[in-house]
Image (tube, rainbow, N blue to C red; front, side, top):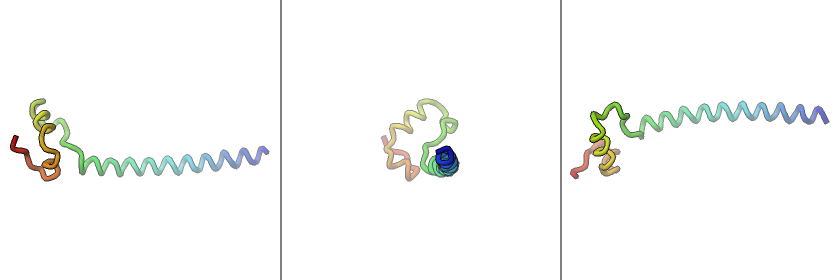
Length: 70
């Protein structure tokens, strides 16, 4: 019975390592997606008014880099 427990623990440890590296790789994928699709960082805005104007724009214009005519 002791060998069965040892085998289960070893298999669990191996699966945990595999999961760790898969999650690590997924974090890199999320970083690439965020850089591609995320809005501008806050440092690029001059004031809170600029942020409010940007948030109230039409979201379809964000993809094209255009400003709305509101």
